[in-house]
Image: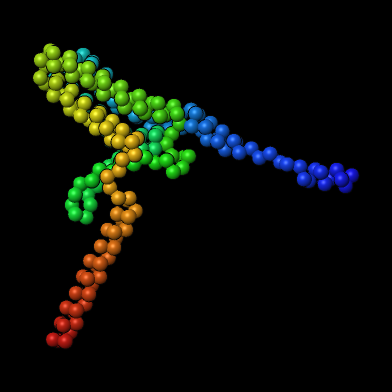
Length: 216
C-alpha cells in the first residue's frame, strides 16, 4: 500500500497549457461583443448611401439632401474614428500639437492585452464597412462625372473625403506607423514644463511682494 501511494505521488501530471489559448480563440471567435458599436459603424454610412439614392423621392431640394448626407457622414466619421475603431479592432488615430507647435499624426495599434479589440466577426464588420462604402461612393463619383451633375459631384467628393480619411488612418494603424512620441512621455514633459512656469511665476510674485513690504 505504501509503495502504491509513493507511485501515485510521483506520477507525472500533464498540464494543459492550451486551455487559455482556446479560451482566447473562443473569445475572438465568439459572437458580437459590442452590438451598439457594430450597429453604428454601419448605420450612418449605409444611411448616407440610401439617402443619396432615394432623396429625390422625398424632396427636390438639393440643399436638404446635401445637409442630410453630410450630417450622416460626419456622424459616421466621428463614431468610426472615436468609438468603433477602438472597440472593434483596437486601433485609433488622432492629431496632436507638440511643444514646438507642430502638428503630428499618431497611429496606434493596441495589441498589449487579449481584451484589446473585438471578435473576429466584429473585425470583419469593421473592415468590410470601411472598405466597401468608399468603393460605392467612388462608383457614384464616376456616374455623376459622366452625367455632368456638378452639384452632386461636389457632394460625392466631400463624401469620399470623409470616408477615405478614416480608411487611410486605420490602414496606417494596421501597419504600425507612429509619428509622435508616446502619450505618457509627452504628458510628462508638458507637466514638467508647466511646473517650471508655475515655480518661476510664484518666485517672481514673492519677490515683488517682498519689495512692496520693504517700501511700506
